[in-house]
Length: 210
Image (tube, rainbow, N blue to C red; front, side, top):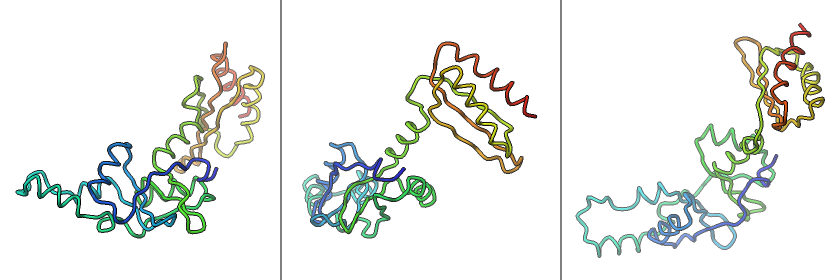
């Protein structure tokens, strides 16, 4: 899975000379928290909702309403934007983007190809992909099998049980347990009549291999 498969292509952008007031208005209207800053099609920075709030005058300020409006209109995005944002390419693996986001606590990446801004991949896009990959939007049942250790070949026998019951496996996830040299395997077959029979049969198959 590549970033091109999940990125948002219908971009909302601003220019460096966009006022702080206009950027704030755009974010509120479009319900977004990041705005790529471009010159033509070239990315020159990114501004976040938190940056805009931090740069805005405090409600406790002694400035008058007129002075506040003037200040917000005069302050430009180029004064507060991140001028060197971390970017991805359309071919960046999804897993790399996820790891990078967790490591550096980045919740959105501009996607650049040949110097041109072509998309943005946000934390929401990544969560949506995980939701789809794990089949969480589909009605079904989940079977968790623990204690496989290094015997992942047993999955073939377990999946054959699903096949006999005509239960389609939407995804398979393994979770290492280093302290026990073990792993858990979560399988999500589509819900079907008689799906409750799958768990005992899968458990029996696992025991027979010991």
